Length: 255
Length: 299
Image 1 (cartoon, each protein chain N blue to C red):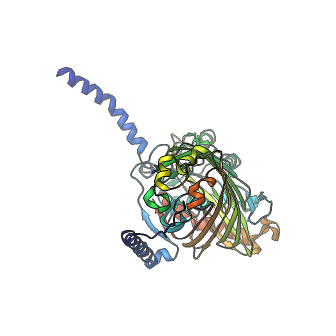
Image 2 (cartoon, each protein chain N blue to C red):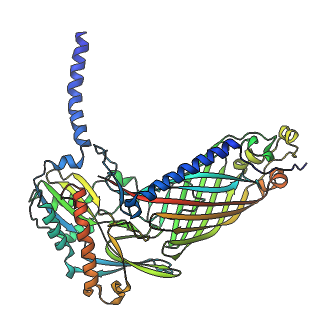
């Protein structure tokens, strides 16, 4: 009897830390955010605009890319996200090299099961790039992907898609991004959420903020970097979607 | 001996069940149409996420599009039959909000892409082949019951361009048959206008003798009971044909689609007296479906 009691005690002592660990592992991102006071924001949406033809596009499978460095999209995103987050958290400015984040935006592996277990490439980058500041959390905004049309072709970040059908065509602009929240000390991913479509009233779908526009937004109508209408429309897509996405992540008030 | 095959009439019980099912579907659609937020294309529901995260699994906290609907398909009442059976089936899918639907043909079987290079996908595939009962069609009277089979194998899919898809499935049967079946299809996907898509292409199917023997072999006892001559399938059964689909988005939520598949059996099973005397080597399947999509936010 005494021996049995002792075994139970030993077992309880061994199991207790495992249970505590398991609770921490299963804790939601929202619960983890309760410990966060200071946040640094990194935006790596990129400085390129893609132009993709979809639908009946002959044998053309390639996207064209244009530099939109002069738009300073990432600076605008950091500014707006900072203003939204500052209502609940203390925003701590951070120096980082966005170029490094562009190439590590975490593309999925073609071996799909590996995506469930592989280490986050952004986590490694945060460790080397931004650790010296050490806020309680990092909010990282990176490009997101969406398939277009019925095939498996994808588009990412900011861009323009032209759908060619047998009886007509349509032009759609997009600003696809994802917000990730990392623990500033452990660099564990606390939450991530792609920006959702602003409405689903269009039959031409993209998994993120997008809008049908006219031909004057097409990059073929001149240098896209100089197209103020296109720039304003892309910036508006980001502005309209940042608040609901940050709100869903419990980082800002929902509208 | 050739037997006359009467038409396939559903029993009153089946009719009542179908009417009940139809009224339930109509009621559900009616309720959704009456829900103004849904009709405007806004998020219909917000549901709380699980109170915990599951390690290694993606977070469900996203905006999702749920699709519900009903499909009605007329299929040959058994493989090789000349009679049709109507089978309603539900449509249900969940995908990330805004994601355009990937192209699927009515011949595709459930599959998971373990290797996904975008244009090229590869992974396991499965198919359920229902049991064949002699009582389901008079043409089968006197023939043995064939148990249900599960076919498991692999699929590969390749898009050389956005508007053209090729797909190969190779599956091995377990249960009702233990043979190997392979399906090859190609589809040209033509967007006619915004939300209006037509697709069509050729089909080729190969099945080895073990895959079709349980359904088409006629042994002495069966011959005596059915009046059909004895028969044993030799070689590979080939079927070739074509299929077409038409999909139309009535609104951003409502979609109607129709499909037709035709195949003709050659060699092997096509020579069976069951096909020659009581069935047909020409196999036609056609269907019509209606679906409704709405968004759900998980936060």
